Amino acid sequence: MTMSVEQLWSLPGTALVGAYAEARRRYAEKKFERDTQRARLEWMRAKLFVNTQGNVAERKMAVDVSEELARKGQEVREMTRDLDMLKIDVDVIDTMIRLRGTHGDQPVHADEAAEPEGE
Image (tube, rainbow, N blue to C red; front, side, top):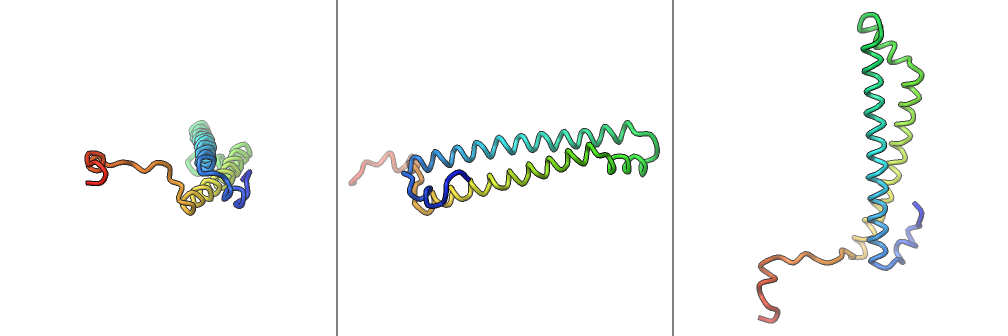
């Protein structure tokens, strides 16, 4: 996280909501990137399995011992760890917003908007 909890607590409400939006954006981008890499890894595994000669056990073994797939798998695990850290940032900022009661504008219900104040 780029800011400490104390710095987040001292931010004005609009800046805190802006920090939350930025953290959510970064989280969504990293999650998309991680999911894309995970899908590519699964595609590479399936492609290797289909293109390998032998019975099912030999094919599975070829996929399991592939160094390239192991390296890609490690990259995906590292991306998952980084994504978890970003999720923590989002959760901390969300908690700050809830503790401070900064929810932005409250939605107005249609039945409340029809009745004038003071009646």
